[in-house]
Length: 388
Image (cartoon, rainbow, N blue to C red; front, top):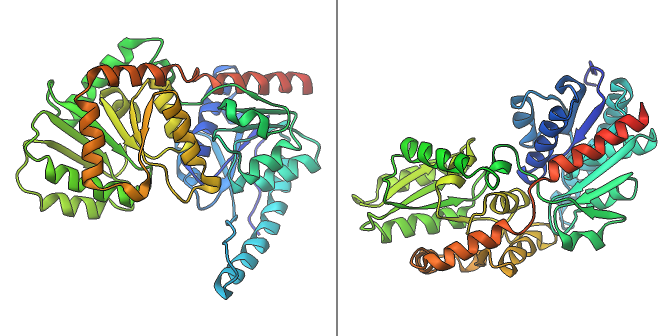
């Protein structure tokens, strides 16, 4: 049984699994600190296996991990055995979450989604602690639905989510600084774009396409992008910044080495922790449609070709992408349809139509203020004052 050397916290933030949950959670932490809550009085409880195990300590926030595992679909012996293990792990995670909350003395628990948030939420409900919920996707997951039933405050990013959760209010998207200042201070974008061109070696006259499949990558997007680069080798007017993800970067780098000499500037990168540079410099982004990605597109007014991950829970990435497309901010291409040819057709048509690109950027910027983190932090601070 792990030792629980837990400091005193005023707030516990809980989320896990993917960047769509963890990155908004870190944005809230930043805004809580800006509002006057000491960083050392904020704790983060998440999964031991998710990206939060690295991202949260790197942000200077105390982290406690739980052994939580997702359930497998199906009735095969392997799936049943794995689910028995997941249930046993959940029981242990519940016990540990109760100890963490009791010893920290936290007055508010902020639940940002992901299965890792379930044990802290249930533990907080049992201890009658105030629970604040935020849903970043268009369709709330099971963890968020569970938390919303016990919440004092329930919030979300999109209008479509409001009727799906009990007493929910839309407060807007969440992004970390400096992305939330792109719209209010164009000089920030200009400076970051210049920095990006220097760092990536992109010419002043080259149009920039960014391909982003998430922290782990997206195999279909990566393979189609390699084909696109091969077909467009003579396009010296274009640069492609390709965030291939940690899982596929070796494959992509090896494939890129076999390409013939290109006039096109091609930069395969495993992971970029300065996404603000990528968003500042790109004319068009090709990407999945997770919550964090959609929030960044809206906050920065970035035109996109969205390729939703087809196996996302409740098909929420498709719904996220369709919300962008309905506003005129994105073009949606199904994952099954992504090939070098379809990617070239979509990207090429947009790069050749400056008026449409400009319209898409404007539409993205009108999708909603990216001040959700500040709004949520204000509600948490109000609950802290009420509980003092």
